[in-house]
Image 1 (cartoon, each protein chain N blue to C red):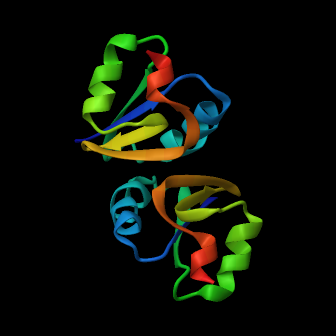
Image 2 (cartoon, each protein chain N blue to C red; image 1 turned 60 degrees about the horizontal axis):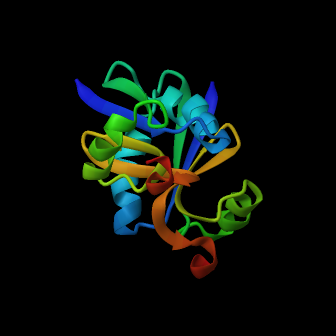
Amino acid sequence: MNKAVFYHAGCPVCVEAEKNVANAIDKSKYKVEIVHLGEAKARIAEAEKLGVKSVPALVLDGIPFHINFGANLSVLK
Amino acid sequence: MNKAVFYHAGCPVCVEAEKNVANAIDKSKYKVEIVHLGEAKARIAEAEKLGVKSVPALVLDGIPFHINFGANLSVLK
C-alpha cells in the first residue's frame, strides 16, 4: 500500500485542501493519514525532514507536494 | 461524476506532480483530464478563469489547488 500523509494546521486553506485534495485520493491505492501540526507539534520535525515547508502539504510516498499556501511551518513551532 | 483537471506545462515539477498527485486521484469518483497548457494555449484563458495562477495546478470541481511551483501562467502565453 502506498502512503499519503496530509499535513495541515486547521487553517481555512488547509480545510479546503483536505476536503477536496486529500479526500480525492484513491483509498484503494493509498493509506491516507491526516496530521494536524498545530495539535501534533512533535511531528513538525518529521514533516520538515520530508521537505515540507508550508501547510497544507501532501506527502505521497515521501515526496512533498505543497498545496496552495496556508502557513509556513516555522509559525507552528 | 466529479471533475478533476490537472493543468501543467511539461516542466519537471509538473511531471512529478502528475506522476504522483494526479495519479493518486480516485478514478471512481473523479473524471481526470490532463491539460498541457504549453501545447493547448487556447485553454490558458479557461485555466485563468478557474483561478489558476501557476502550474502545476489541480482543479477539483472548479476549485483550484496549486501544487508546488513550476511556472507562472503568464510565461506560457
